[in-house]
Length: 175
Image 1 (spheres, rainbow, N blue to C red):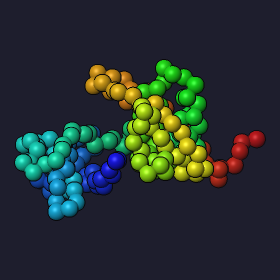
Image 2 (cartoon, rainbow, N blue to C red):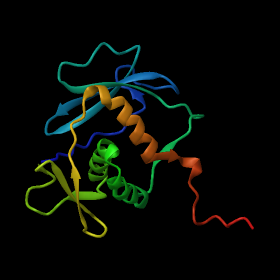
Image 3 (cartoon, helix red, strand yellow):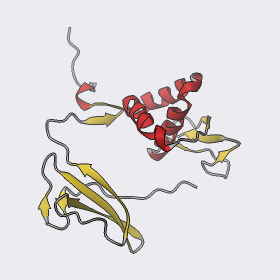
Image 4 (tube, one colour):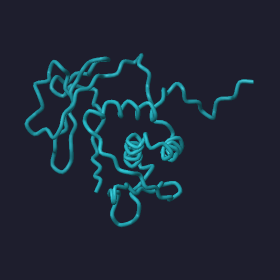
């Protein structure tokens, strides 16, 4: 069964030094189990002394610079079309599988209603589109550690675009 954990966004504050994190500054984030919930804490690199003993997980990040372009997830219609079109390209099986998992997390897809959840049965992940309730079976893929960086790059190229590239319907067309 797939679990979903709610973890807050970056606080933009160093937990130890009680100061704002600066643009471009490297920082570390940790997740700590607090009662029946999880708490995120962010630490500047200079205050970082390793993860606290009670940490469930930790990672290294960098605060974005204001001049950096902002990336946004492609519209769900694009993601749906992409997932369906990728079926015709067996060499894209792994990025397609990761795309389906991402769409499950974004609630564009849900587990197929067979009482089993989004389990992989007979090597297939059965999912249902939220909008039209159609069901799709996606071959599950084993993904090795050595492939993760390349697949992450491929998936990011497919899923994200520069926020400035998006056009709104409110803007009048140039004639």
